[in-house]
Image (cartoon, rainbow, N blue to C red):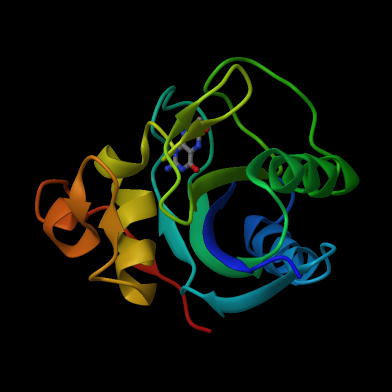
Length: 163
Ligand code: ROI
């Protein structure tokens, strides 16, 4: 029997009703093979990182229990993005749905397709604050506890949306 691992996924959208996109993606994560959604953060509206001539984002973080290996889970995330109509546009530009594999257990890896922990995780308020809502004591390999990382970023642009 394969052992289930706890993984965390960051969700982001700023096109085509971002709140609906993020909620649909949370439901889709729970339908991935060998995977269940065990917790979801609140949704947070926040200004774009990158080009400012794009709409605000809605971000959230999901906690999963999964028997999928990291790259198989990544492929599952790409499938959800594609089914929700993601198109590749300009770099750091607007998007219907972005799913980032943040953490897969305590695995550290740097492969062509996948770096774990996610390289932006420790410095992005729109990832750290929702993650802290789920697991403040969680240690990010190489960086330390999520609650401590939160104190080093500016979370003032985040607006928590009603459930
Ligand atoms: N900015 C915010 N606020 N949230 C995101 O999810 C996000 N995703 C991105 C870029 C374009 C870098 N900016 C973002 O990919």
